[in-house]
Image 1: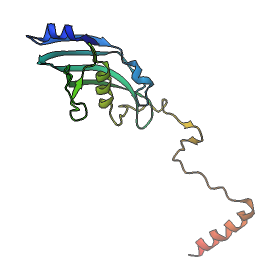
Image 2: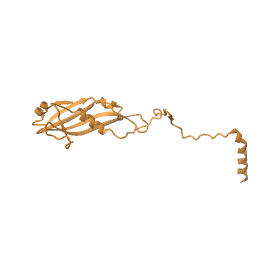
Image 3: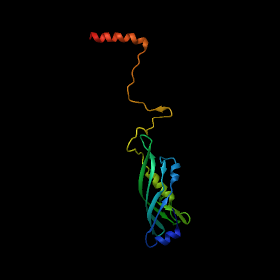
Image 4: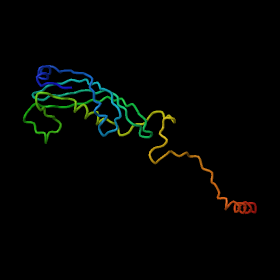
Length: 174
């Protein structure tokens, strides 16, 4: 989602400039995060211009697939993110002190890095699958397996089998 400065100045000078579109952010799947799959997201918003500053208010809507915190099965997670970003075409902006205003380098404003950043900030810490399917659960892996809670029968060493009769006799005496 790219806009030229000329396009923004022309369309957002007197009234808000509205935009919408579908954006492919599948690059987020290959990053080091929990997103297993993400569909193209819908972006809708407006841009207002004031002096040399451009105020973008937009909504990102989509769905991502995340792993369940208990079972690691895929969990669809729909999201709707409301974002606000401020850009400036001024050459006098100080990036070090004013981190809320993003400078525009060149003649093109690319909104994609800010869309991706807002999506990454919205990824929840953990999600849970609503219904657990016992057949879909992972039962074993590399050097581990799920154990049942059934008590195991205690097998007595055959050498001590005769001693068991002694314990039975003492119980009868009590």
